[in-house]
Amino acid sequence: MKNSLKVLVLISIMFFSIQAQAQLKFGVRAGLNLADMAIEGMNGMTEKMITSFHLGPVAEYSLSEKLSLESGLLLSGKGKKVEYNESDQGITLGVKATISPIYLEIPVNALYKFNIKDGKVLLFAGPYFAFGVAGKTKTEFTASGLPSGMTLSSLGLTDETKNIKFGTKSDSDMKGTDFGLNFGAGFEKNNYQIRVQYGLGLSNLDPQGSSTNEMKNRVIGISLGYLFGENRFGMNNFE
Image 1 (tube, rainbow, N blue to C red):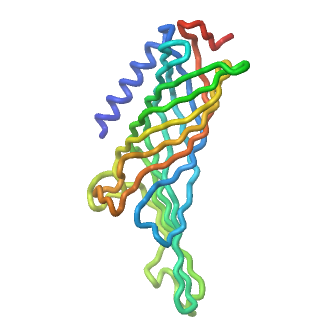
Image 2 (image 1 turned 180 degrees about the vertical axis):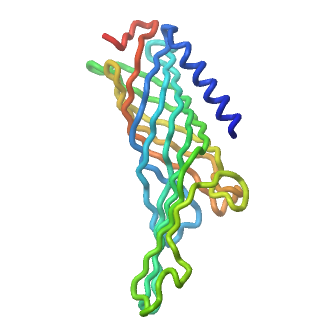
Image 3 (image 1 turned 180 degrees about the horizontal axis):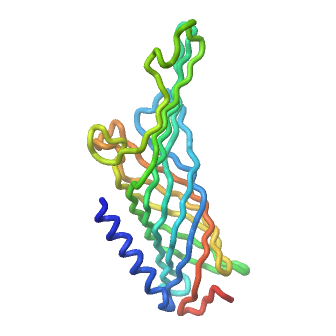
């Protein structure tokens, strides 16, 4: 995993180092993630999105006035929250579980632009590759109606926060690599881009690869980007 990350970082550095070529623009992008996961076996549980972020350098290589290829190296937070409550004989026990992995994500999109008034509409789609680099799992318990002298601790229920363990072993929380598709739209004016995209995870992140416990990322991203430079087709970002 460490060697793979080094190679990816090196490729990205080489990609950005040729920005002096007229058809390449580079910049930064940051924004909000509304993250969810498709998980099998959630019957009876309340499923919720979590909010996170994405941030990192990006580059755009113009193939023509309207068509470009774009990539980047983004830190991107994903995950999900689930809640479950059960009542019996006047006692209600509840649990809230949150998993919030952070990935190093490399999108590779085809980008199409067309003019509208004083800006450009953006349409884009393509695959992404992601590597888990950090994150937390958090478990919280609640109770009501407990008899006098009985506590959550006495029942063996204690809140816990721990680092995500990526891998494929039985004690792993989730796999460390992800693959999927991004697609979305946006608007560009001068140096700025406003975008909305949907990330559809295709990889089963269950550590054992079980179809009965299948986990797949689902992320809505809203971002603001800033691009520098110009390209050979005469679209100067400093006009």
